[in-house]
Amino acid sequence: MSEFSEYFNCHIEEIRRFQGGGKYFLKSRRRYRDCLSLVFDYLKAGGKSVLDLGGWQMGALCAPLASSVLCVSLSAPKTRLEAAFPVTAEVFDIMAPEFPLDGQSFDLVFFLEVLEHLPPPTDLVMRRLKALIRPGGYMVMSVPNLAFWQKRIKFFLLGRSPLKLSDERDPYGGYHHIRPYTYDECLKLFRRFGLRVERRLSGNYHRGWYHYPFHSIERLAPRLAHKLIFLVTPEDEGGPMSPPSQGSQGSIAGLGEQGTDKGNPE
Image 1 (cartoon, rainbow, N blue to C red):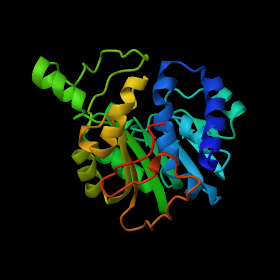
Image 2: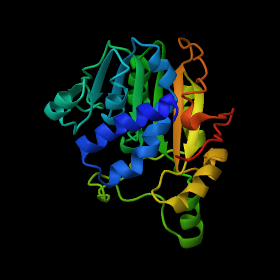
Image 3: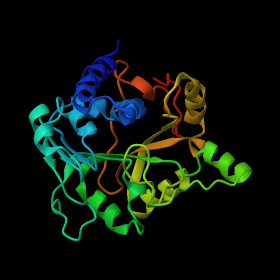
């Protein structure tokens, strides 16, 4: 087992015990793995400050390697979280007029499955995100793909909208997406706000072995994929990140210019 796999399996189990394992955790486990694989070597260098904006799972995963971790969410279990993991947890709305993190910056920012829940325009949140990335730092952002191939089939053949009503609750207790994005829309968004894409991942993160073949195909065709994951850095600030070592490349083996991945889905 590689160093990365050993680390991930150990610490994701701690999160499972804390969170209770539920449907959302099982659905998200492989996505957490892919997101961490993009920055594992960067974190191993030590001394990195981490911000998990809109969640806490990635912050908890990174905590043993980071110098400091701040988790920000509207629903973070602050007291329990800080008792269980070496992190600081804060609860506030990242879209509020007064932003508590103004003037602060971090080596690594996670912004996973949040953007699609925010109403347009994106100017406010994207400017805040860029300002939060320290010079030479990185952000990992993931979004569901509006142009996912299954959504295309449902829309064109069955007439089903790829969007749900914004006030309709989903099976996990939250609210459905307000403004999903396609692969190309994400690239345009990054360019507009001066963020350079360093690496890209895509795939099918639905549960069940029967989804694995689709996961491999969607690695090669990000515009049709279920989920999109981007590693970005400020255009005028960032520097090239060293390539992952053989022992920690995990699911990013063979990553090419278009974000393809030749590794195993798990």
